[in-house]
Image 1 (spheres, rainbow, N blue to C red):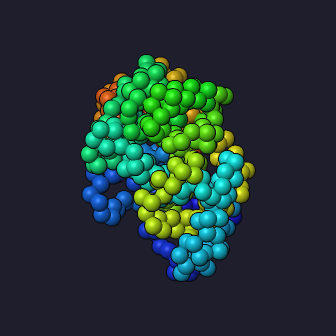
Image 2 (image 1 turned 90 degrees about the horizontal axis):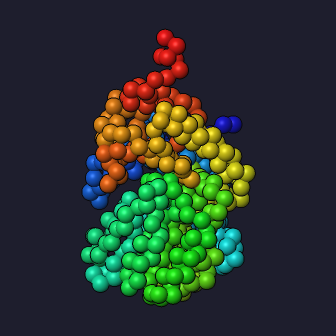
Length: 397
C-alpha cells in the first residue's frame, strides 16, 4: 500500500491520532511559518495545506518515512506507556546502532530532538562573551540565534563569490574562538566542500587553536552528490571537541518526529549530553529512526527521486538565463533578480509556498525546496508566470 501523509495514521491503532497530529508528523511549512511570523516560545499552529497547495518552503522529504520506518512505528505503539529507556527499542539501542556505523560505540552518540537541539547545546557548551561563535554570513541561523540569546559573540564571515563557505577566512577567525559552525552542505545556498578541504580546515584550527570546538552540520549529507564530499565522522573520532550533527528530518522524511544525533569522541559527547533535554526523544521517534537505518534501499530511492526533481528545477532556472547555485541538497538557491518577499507573495497567491528571506541575499535570491517531480512541474509553471519568463506553451501561441 502506498503511504502518504494523509493515509499514514490509518496504519496506527484506533485513537492514536487525528488529522492535526498527521500534519505535525509531516510538518511541512512550520520552519517557514516560524521564521516569517516569529516563534514566541509556545505552541505554534501551522494551518494544514489546502488540497491544491504546494508547500516547498521547508526542506522536507515530501513523501515521508519509508515502509520500514512506518512498520517500526506501528510496532512501537505497544510501548508508548514506557519511558524511552524501557521500550522494546531503546535510545541505547539506537545509539549503539549509530555508533557502529562510524566505528564507534553508544558513548560516541547523543540523541536529540532533531539536530537543532545539538546545535543549541553546542552553543551553550562552547561559546560565551569571550568565546565567540564563528559561522558564515549566510548559513543556518539556529546557532546564531542561540548565541545571541545566551550572550555570546558572533562572527559571521562573508561567503565566497560562488556562495560557498570561505574556509580560509573562517579558519583565521576561529583562532581563540569557542565554536565554529560549519554547515556542509550549506543551508540555504546548497554549496558543499570536499572532505579533503574540511580535513585541512579542521587540522589547521585544531593545531592553531586546540580549545576551539568545531561542529560539522551534515543535515543534508544524504543528498550531496559532489564526488569529493563525505562525512566528517572520522575527523570527529580523531579530534577532541570536533563533532558531527545529523538529523532524520531530511532524507529520512521524519521532520515531525523530531530526532537527530551528535557523534564524536566519548569525552566530547559527555560535554553535550548533560545539557540535552531529558527524554527529549520519544519511543516512536527512536523506533522510526532504527527502522529507517535498516532500510537503505528507501534512502537510495529518495536520493534518486530528489535528484530528478532537483534537476528539473535547476534546468528550468538555468534555461531561462537565471543563476541557480549548483545544489547538493533538497533545495535550490537561485538569483531571481528581485526581492524574495515579492516573489514569495506572488507565488503564494497562486498556491505555491516558497522559502523565507535569507540576508544578505534577500533582495536577489530565493530558496526553493524540492517537492515531488509533479509538484516541481507545477511550481516551475508558476515561477515562469510570476517572473515573466517565456514558456514553450506561450511561445507557441
